[in-house]
Image (cartoon, helix red, strand yellow):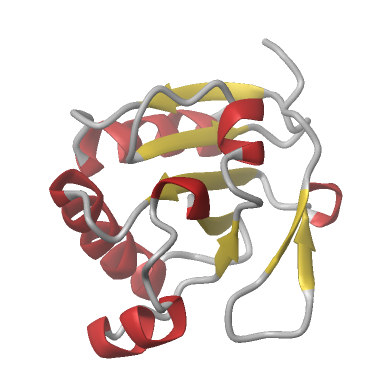
Length: 140
């Protein structure tokens, strides 16, 4: 498995940055998305339900908005209008999206506790596919 590329990005609705080096859970889920993509919309709705019900002591979730592919959206308004409460980071254009070699949105990356890329899911993956990967990492 390859080590996950390090990054630090600004959080939406916060003055802070979130950095991969601060992730210390058994599983880190990183999801790349845009507001205009129907597959992203389906994915982030499922991730919101997951975020509300997950055990946060075992898994960390961050959603990275790919600003370079969705520059016109008012992110703060989009998030509040849709009731999304998960942590959202703003990519620097497509910098982190490219670091992770994403080919489209949504892309979900699961990291193990050593911060290695364990699983990568693309736009046709279901939330069940992703949860199977999370389950495998939590059991491991």
